[in-house]
Image 1 (cartoon, helix red, strand yellow):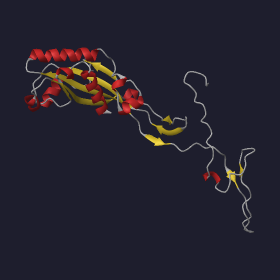
Image 2 (cartoon, helix red, strand yellow; image 1 turned 180 degrees about the horizontal axis):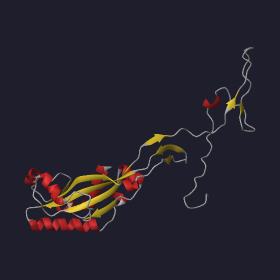
Image 3 (cartoon, helix red, strand yellow; image 1 turned 180 degrees about the vertical axis):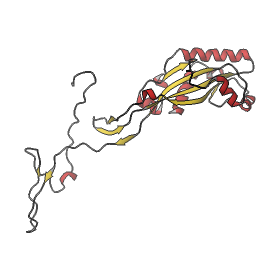
Image 4 (tube, one colour; image 1 turned 90 degrees about the horizontal axis):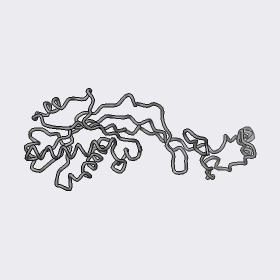
Amino acid sequence: MIHEVDEALRGLLAGSGLEASGVEIVFDAPTRDWAARRNAPTVCAFLYDIREDVTRRGSGAGEVHDADGYVVARRTPPRWFELTYLVTAWASRPQDEHRLLSQVLSTLVATDALPARLLTGTLAELGLTVSLDTAGVGADAPTASDVWSALGGELKASLGVRVRAPLAGTGSAAAPPVTEGLEVRAADARQGGDPAPGRRLRYREAGDPGPDGFAGPRERPPAPARRRRGGRQP
């Protein structure tokens, strides 16, 4: 999920024209040695904090249906995490860095969520909103000065960007649907006779399933209609 958020952020920033103007977009740690090696205008989005939003943790399991409407698996609810990035601009002059940072700020504050067209992998499959909060990181996250101190670099202008993204739950395959009732056959073991024709319990007008029993091929009935939320079943 983390790498999918990275790619969505890269796509969002690249769409603002940064890459078209020759600006690199990276996710490296902006250490002193890294900064000394930069020789081109760069926007760096460094992920430095990952925390679960326990207030959104769910329970139970949801059903996964196939194209015909049958339940093929059951999946636990997704768990939500807050990913906090330190976004900085790097250029030869402070004026150029501020110009780049201003362009990044204008792009990020213009949206409250990562566009669905930029989501890939599990984020696209879940179809949930991945919210975006720029320059408003909560007090529980490490401060910018703490991050710079840990990196061994000098403090410079930066943006705090927080993304709330879901991590897909674990799934387990579901057994195929039961389509026929229990079938019983009786025979006299003392005489070694053949079993009598089978009879399905609690089902009327049901014939003998044949020598293969339930293992034999049979027609699959249509899946039951699914009830819509907040409305009546069609």
